[in-house]
Amino acid sequence: MTPAKALADRRRPKRVDVRRIRAFRSRCLDWYDGNGRSFPWRRPGTLSDYEIVITETLLQRTRADVVARIVAGFMSEFPDWESLANAPSVRLQDQLRPVGLWQRRADSFRRLASEMVLLGDLPRSREELERLPGIGQYIASAVMLMRDGRPEPLLDSNMARVLERYFGPRERADIRYDPYLQALSRQVVRCSRSLEASWAILDLAALVCLPRLPRCDQCPLATGCRFRLDAPVEPRGRRMLERKRPPTRAR
Ligand code: SF4
View 1 (spheres, helix red, strand yellow):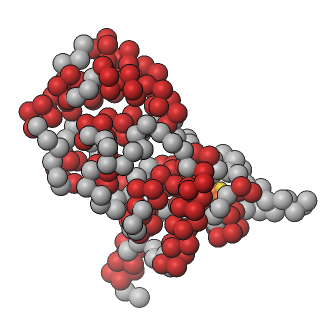
View 2 (tube, protein in one colour; view 1 turned 60 degrees about the vertical axis):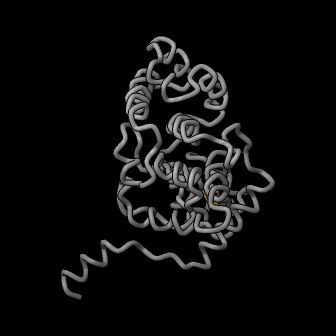
View 3 (spheres, protein in one colour; view 1 turned 90 degrees about the vertical axis):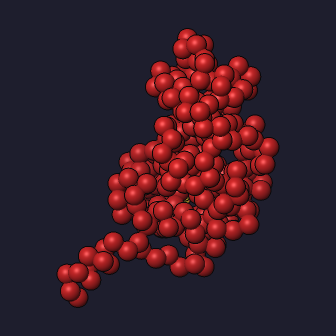
């Protein structure tokens, strides 16, 4: 193999058997139908663009049950971009305090809200969305998924943990630039229930595939999961499933 071909091969994402992806998705959705979590923002087609962006931004780095406790009060006090852009710092920080990082989040929300007051509507394309302050790949995907019905994955560290454990590890440290995880997550949610497929994986990450000690004995993915199958076996026949990596927090 020439050096150029070797380099090209390294850049090409690993391929995963499409039947394995279908089986994974089908098990996730079956499990979700009986075990998925219910949150105020999980009402497809009923959220405004503003509500999508604010809620999904709050959900980053914060557990969903914590966000659920504050989201109604937040929306009631700051129902649109204009009220958020003009929000007094103290009131905004008070609302955000329970979810943590309140100063940084307040600044970021106000910058985005000021821009949105000038713009009027959220842009349609991913490139334009990602140019807005505070909107990265994840929020742009959430907008395109929930607003436009596009099959974009809600790929965060929690979804990445489930995918990596089941299918195999990423190729790059940052999931935003990992061609394997990017391609895999898109294939997984490319179906008629793409929004629920993402929610199913996030709920599995929060309830079953926990960061430090996954509950494999309760997991619908157990039979095909690489992490579980590769786990060393103790003398008494039990698998040692506690591992340090990936160090992510269930949301
Ligand atoms: S079998 Fe275990 S490690 Fe694999 S996805 Fe399920 S909970 Fe996670």
